[in-house]
Image 1 (cartoon, rainbow, N blue to C red):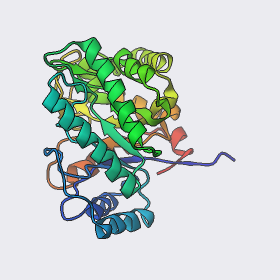
Image 2: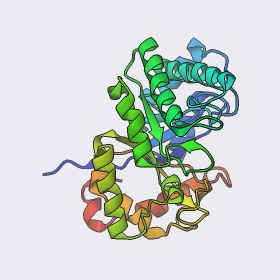
Image 3: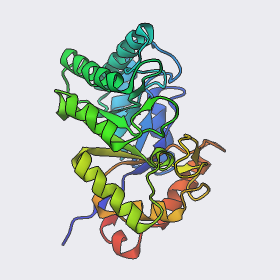
Length: 295
């Protein structure tokens, strides 16, 4: 008899009131995985974590059914920056965030690759790969940085599978790099998921260009904007332009059963919308696939 797999589904949770509160919030709506910021996502620096904070979080995580917990870096970080001041701040901030994950026992840290602003795309890609190598060399651990695919706004890096592959290929620490796939970003960048042919083509290309083994996390977000819009605006599941089928395909794709799926949809009415979106996604799972999942 085939062993059932846990459905890894959750949402981004606030750390207001203490890091461990994020786990409690996730538990309150039956998350089996969550994403958090380990510090303010709008500030470069953060005070060091205390032993009490670390122990509270790790003890709560150890007694919880939520696993894995994924962290997301500050939105300010741009390790592909042309401007030296921004680059140096970004490198230091990313180093600090990696260390925070190590202390908290968080296995994955999601990173927006960066933007080339006044520089060139080629140089920025090389800078990102080199900087990751420098950080990994200085901070040996098993924490993986997950490069997130982007919507393609402005000069952002990472809107194509090829760009993500370039960073990965140039790195000397490939075992420390994975991919976080954001559905809204992919849609905005021109990757269609709304029909079976396009959906299958997407993952075929992903496997050929990057390798399915690199996929460690999925951000489940609908899009307020059209395909190829290059606009990053998240929407509730089924309320945007992507269509229900996009998410039905994902929720019934057996290759993705063991991949954490995390909502980053708009926060409204506390956690009610997160709970509503999660239930909607669970309802999409076919009767046949439910036999193989612990829901």
